[in-house]
Length: 357
Image (cartoon, rainbow, N blue to C red):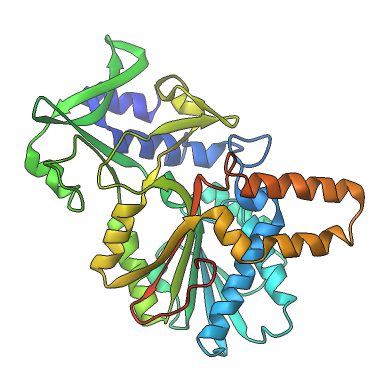
């Protein structure tokens, strides 16, 4: 019996967020500690894996912001949840080739999975000035550009729902006392407990609420860096914008949605971010949202098609074919183009809007 089963056996049921946290991050059995998760042979694929041209567009955005803040002599690039390290590797390689970018930069990587840190270090062993940090507040005081691709969607979440004017928390228990199978279990809770995790929702109008655990701490830390370090935050993720919450949790295995209750030991567990709530969290800290646009809008504004045309003229037919397929996946509304969104946050007086207008 593993840690998760022992805990359920002891407590009869556990909150959904605790279940997700152990399933994904447990040091012995957690999904992110043991599984091959990235790429076509893994369970999901991210934009940088599809094509390095995605990272090139982010590189141009980073250099453009550096120019906007008057070309300081030293900057930080902080990536949250670097995955296998491919995106930051591509970004470093790209900005080093931009002749006008004549500044020193330090790269900070925030990662909690020891397995992924090893993978990242292996992929980035040719580079200097890269530091892995558990606490993002520990970076130096230089101007800081924060980037994140599919970071928040991996947070453990709490779920609350209302039935016949009674609030319940979504929990996990054994099914019919069968310790080999689990099921959802609704635990009746006090309305004040729900309010603790739903301060940006109107709980009188909502019947379902999802709350990513620890997101307030991250928003507060990112906000402090933006204010202190003349910083900016660019993120990509899937989600929706609404004043109403909904059930978005899903399990992904081999690029397909699977049954969470059956596959929890061998799948990624994710959810859709409510961007409306995320924006409110930053606004509370006096941080403005530059914009929220579909990924394809951002990439096209950054010049992805122009860059693709440059590559096409130089490469052979096989590489050109792969490039066309990759760009289609990044831009096609039926693929990642519309479902994924680009968001950016900065100080109130910041006028930098590249990629969003």
